[in-house]
Image (cartoon, rainbow, N blue to C red; front, side, top):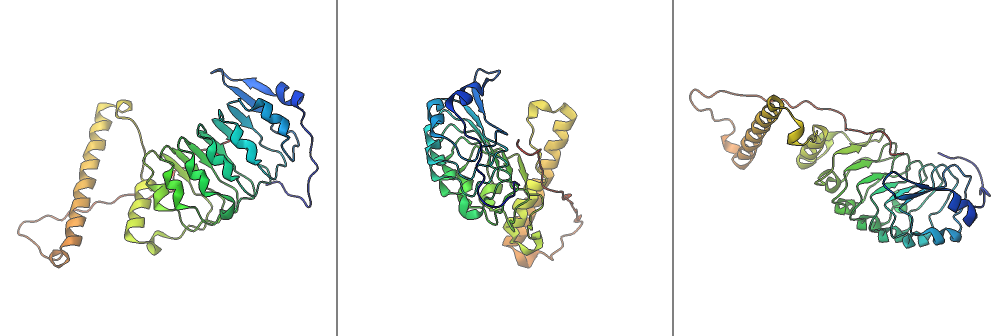
Length: 265
């Protein structure tokens, strides 16, 4: 994280400099790359380029994302990692086309993450790693398109089940947080955490026939075990009853660390 006392004066960016920093991507989209430019504040002249699709402001000295960021309605990719940002503006919720948001390695706290972030209905990747966040809002569970979440190197003691249960979530990185031991959690929270720990999502078409059959067999075993446990919970007085010629089976699900992907850079 960028360290230092007092305000950094920073380099001033002109409209000409910004225009010369636009790159055309392989898919024809335009990326405005102002990374590593020594910028401390964003000039309003950038509004003349508000039709760009990607904006890279990483590795600067930026303390604030201006409210007028909402004018960048075509923005699908916003990278502001490694700056000095303390708060994400409420107006970011207006960027309905945003797919990728990286605010890693800043000075964000829980108060610096607005509820309006949950309005980004198309967001696929969110990186909040390397900040000072001690709590995540349950409203992030509204981001139904989220596939990857990074919250490593923060001060989290738990992750809301609304996030863990996101329908398209494939990877979540919670490394180096003081996450509470699952023994201190409720039964429902433990089940949710174990589900994500053991989760490896693939398409059936990507598996060979033997592997697909094995996965289906394991799934069947887990479902039978779950039904057995649910039945036992509903009939607690029958747990110790043994029927003739019954066979006890034990299924062990190996634990594991949270899945993680490389930092979203």
